[in-house]
Length: 70
Image (cartoon, rainbow, N blue to C red; front, top):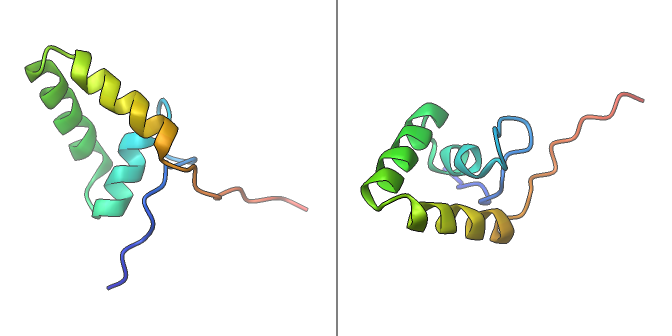
């Protein structure tokens, strides 16, 4: 099984597509990744989780999932 490239999801993302992109890359359910992110963020006083999310938002390229109706 070939692992896909880690990208932000442009069609399933709520804020920036970081959690959705991680879920697709790991092959996990998106809701599970989002719940784990919230739990880890709250356990670390939320600030480090927010910083990590912003860094991933900047570093992870956006996928090219645009369907054009031509």
